[in-house]
Image (cartoon, helix red, strand yellow):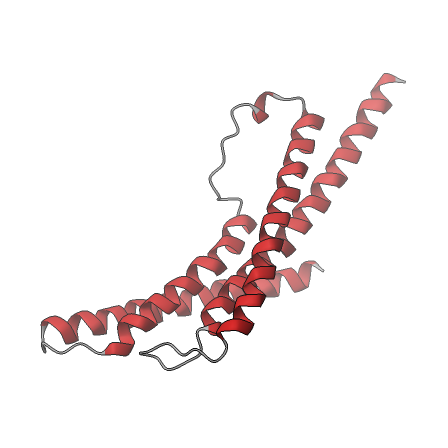
Length: 166
């Protein structure tokens, strides 16, 4: 399982880097065309926005993997270890539920938007909604893995407390 996750991590990181490079290139081209040649292309701005959406939704999974999302832990940090872990587990469950609902409606939007093209880049707008589905799906996968780890830690902290009392 860890080997598969490492491959997934590498694919995610590589995709994010390539999309970021393509987005910067498309936006740079748009700026050059607009300010140097007084002629803007319709597709480069739209491609930049499209890639930004993909970067954002893939980024939520990567941010969760690296535990870099903003959170306020002032109260939780003062809790005993077992309660802190239970709070983290509860948080992961809420995040999984929110992303599950978002993923569900993202799938519905893909179906609704399948025949509606972007004006500039001439692809279906459902490709934009696919980023939401992929991002939330990866986030749910990562959150589930973290939840399993937290549950294992709760069990271990409980058994170490019981072992010390005997």
